[in-house]
Image 1 (cartoon, rainbow, N blue to C red):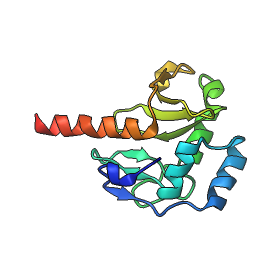
Image 2: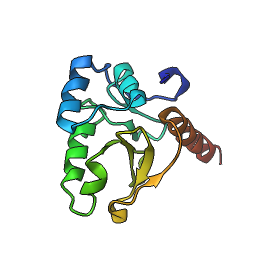
Image 3: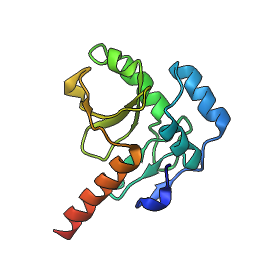
Image 4: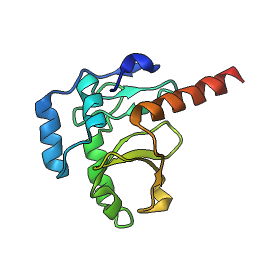
Length: 144
């Protein structure tokens, strides 16, 4: 289960409604994986310890992000080199280093770099684990 209290969150958006999620799923052409759906029911995006958008807002922009998951995913679907990847995945966030985090319709989390085309690097972690690990990375960097 997604718990915001387990993460260092700097800013977050008001939770999404079930209607907002259903509308986004209709546009995407598939249902969001349960873990991502639950995250959006908790917050419409949030920034992590690096002030990067660990979770992009779903479709409604927030003060901390004009980029939304739905709009970025649509843009990525238009890239010839990566269209096959993003046709069954969403771009849900990043941690400020140039890559994008994605999740397949089946719920597999990956990191994607534009120069990799349609070849993601699968992380084999849950969203909660990903966000927790990246938060710890920034904690270790600030302690150095």
